[in-house]
Image (cartoon, rainbow, N blue to C red; front, side):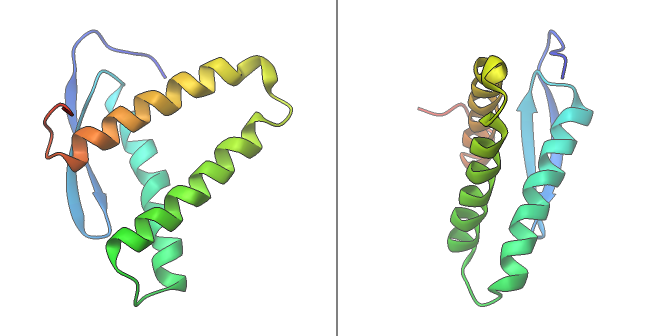
Length: 104
């Protein structure tokens, strides 16, 4: 995933809601991340359809964290890269949740 010099906005749909994600990542990369998160959240929502959105998001985040930690097994040399990507993704989520504004 290459970083363009200027931030752009990519719209990602998750569980019927549009999230404008401002990032320096390539828009295709942001869309791919959004698809991954959407698929994780849909899988949780399908297994627990009566749960509220926050509950679904927390369970999906736990599944994503599990994927992350499993990816570290056998990939110790790439740990710093994975951590940097996780921090970049966390910043994108913070911006999306705060309505596109930079977090306080």
